[in-house]
Amino acid sequence: MDSRINEEHISTPVNSPLPDIPLNTTSTDDDVLYAHLNPTLRADAALPAAVRMELIKHGGVIEHKAYRTAMDYAHWLLTQPLGVAPMGMLVTGEPGAGKSTVGNELVRIGQGRVLMFQAGGARNMRDIYGRIIEALEGLVSKNARTSDRQHTVFRLFRAMNIRGLVADEIQDVKDGTQREHQQVLTSLKMIMNEAKVALICLGTPESDQALRIDKHLKARLRPFRLPQWQANQDLVDLLGVLETSLPLRRPSELRNEQVLNYLAEVSEGSLREIMSRIKCAGVRAILSGEERLDLAGLKAAEDPPPRPQGLESLR
Ligand SMILES: Nc1ncnc2c1ncn2[C@@H]1O[C@H](COP(=O)(O)OP(=O)(O)O)[C@@H](O)[C@H]1O
Ligand SMILES: [Mg+2]
Image (cartoon, rainbow, N blue to C red):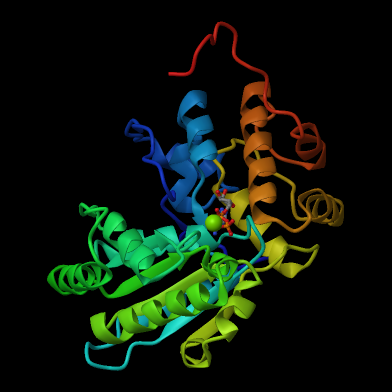
């Protein structure tokens, strides 16, 4: 089916550190036993059940088509020489489509050169600079004036050689008055111009409308859309990556019409729902010894896996 599946589709988990993984030295046996998995991930299938369940729960970032398209452009923006008028992008998608995942990955890849902040609830320039300084882990004095905050942001951006600013939940800027709304957009434009950073806005589809009142800013943000998933080839490709990367010991059977229709329907197109169903089914498959995913396993995974005996509190 999908011949493009390889390790490049998977990168490290988004937010949390992986558990300690013991070294595995039986790679030749693994190649025979776990031939259904991506060669670089076969050793994972030999790990103890508890470790494999943690790996599944943590998950990894899958470089699906829309994700890759957005990340390619972000990379292009972030590697422009200094001095070139900075540009930006607007990544939209319904809740759970993977927008913050894009932002978190940019921060991770940016190694200190990309900063992300929550635009939601910011009403004016002073709020925007405050949010950014908070994100820089600086101390924001409650009384600092807008001009002081602005100065601090530009100075810190220069000192830290910040190249990209990710504004998450950008649709929320339209919740303020028209004047507040305009002020927030003006401050973002000023940051782009003065601090010479690429601006990466993330938000729901309403973001487009939220940015429309500043034509100059909008013209500088190339639009990208993260999809609502349907029973089509893109979903086949996504499931192909999962079949070859989840550390299950037997080959899964996900790329068929029934599974595609079922997942598209129960998730209502949300990648968060698809991933959460797959993760739950993966953990259940390890606990039951089934060690593979199929339609029945996905259906049963509407409920969480059975709670281990004796688990009284979370560690
Ligand atoms: N590229 C991806 N690869 C794997 N899982 C993803 C990806 N994008 C999103 N997810 C899953 O969907 C969940 C929601 O993603 P998130 O980025 O928070 O969505 P949004 O910000 O659009 O609401 C994530 O916690 C993760 O489980
Ligand atoms: Mg989000």
